[in-house]
Amino acid sequence: MSVIRTAIIGFGTAGRVFHAPLVAADPHYALSAIVTGSPERERAARHSYPQTDILADTDALFASAREFDLVVIASPNDSHAPLARAALEAGTHVVIDKPIAVTAAGAREITTAAREAGRVLTVFQNRRWDGDFLTLRDVIARGRLGEVRQFDSAFEWWQPDTGTGWKDLAGPDQGGGVLYDLGPHLIDQALQLFGEVTDIHAERDRRRPDSRSDDDSFLTLRHVSGVRTRLWMSTVAPAPRPRFRVSGSRAVFRSHGLDPQEAQSIAGRRPGETGFGLHDDGRAAVVEDPQGTQNVPLHAGDYREFYRRLAAALREGGPLPVDPNDSIRALEIIEEAIRQTR
Image 1: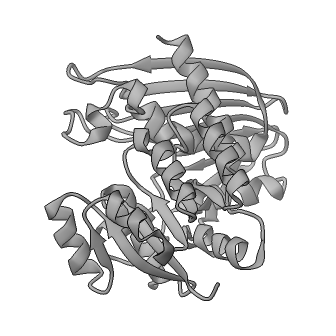
Image 2: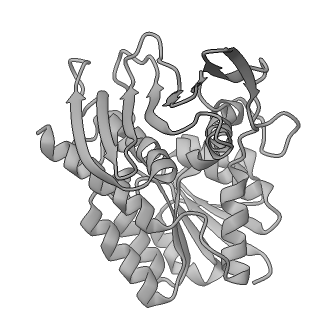
């Protein structure tokens, strides 16, 4: 495989802000096609990627599937599993934007289908390459916090009115709501850091009168390792909590603000440009212990690593950037949270 001919289904936030810029920035890939049924998004795609074919629907894509090696599914959540099956049946490898599916059973079916088809299937858990998360992993690995006891992680913003996009209009059975939107990120990070979970407690609320799904949710997880995780996710937070607050036997780690890569991409900056992935204000995390507080420089976030690792997997048989079973486990936790709060 010389260059990985790639088609992206969907040109909303996931396709436009994340996948298309990352694929276009990596010399191992060719951004060969974008599928969108929206005239406005079609115009935006043609403007940003004039050498890329813009297709109106997936029928056109799968009719010419032999022209592609990889299909990236960046469409609404309830379409992930059906489109993944169609792509696998057409003979392509598949990237699914999180969540891998709406149900764990559906996710297991498509991973089985990928294995039987002899095709690669992976999940875009890009938050593994957030700069603050990379910094936290390094701090923990160096033992600066001692024995980690409590992991607090929050992903919150202020959007007091419901929007007109599918994330606000979809019900829980369609993968709508903040738990399906942000939970796959926060849960995946917790599992990556601290391993398997034995106990789950969930709270889900609809704070906006016209919300169809949860817009303010909370999870606590008890890990086999003994760490307790607390996860906040909200679209109605007038002011956010710290992004991370991690308590250990020796010190506490804190960081504030979301990784800048999404905002930078929306602003028109591109992966690989000078300063991409770093906060423009030069902010740092802090480690605080009884002797005082020390600033910890934040690593640069780098979502390009996902596609670098995928290229190695496709071309050389290297490990996947994300094992789909990790995403299935996170989805099982989400399903348990929903069961508790119906």
